[in-house]
Length: 157
Image (tube, rainbow, N blue to C red; front, side, top):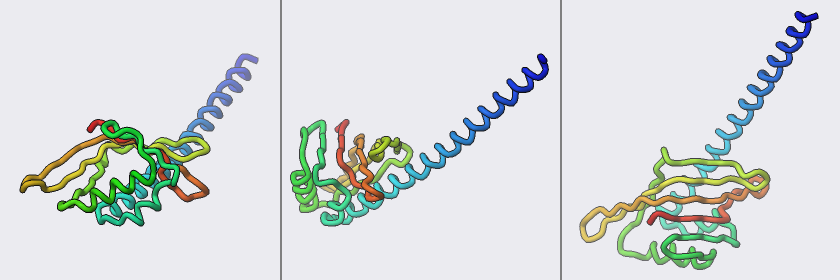
């Protein structure tokens, strides 16, 4: 009887471990797919930014956008794109590069994803290369496969 109990207990533990491993594999694959999706969206968004394509950039944001900037407060959709246009009108090109090793992506159940990272903005000013490294957090909303940013927190300026 003791052997039967030990055998049943061992099978139960093995089954639970196997089920847990399968679940972890599914989660890992899902997280990799989400990470890749958001990283690709980030790359496309900032390719539009670096080429000063404001109309294309607008397609990456919800119209109820809230943008929180540590040195500028809370701004909405229209002001965000007015600010981008002002940046694009400057005498120099401001280019953004993601620091890829800093990128984190986390799912938001039933909504989308959180993107966290650091990026650098570079430009030549008065003959000198200026580089600023800043932190950001973006909330991506998944509306039936149509991913858009609904919230941005830009900080550490």
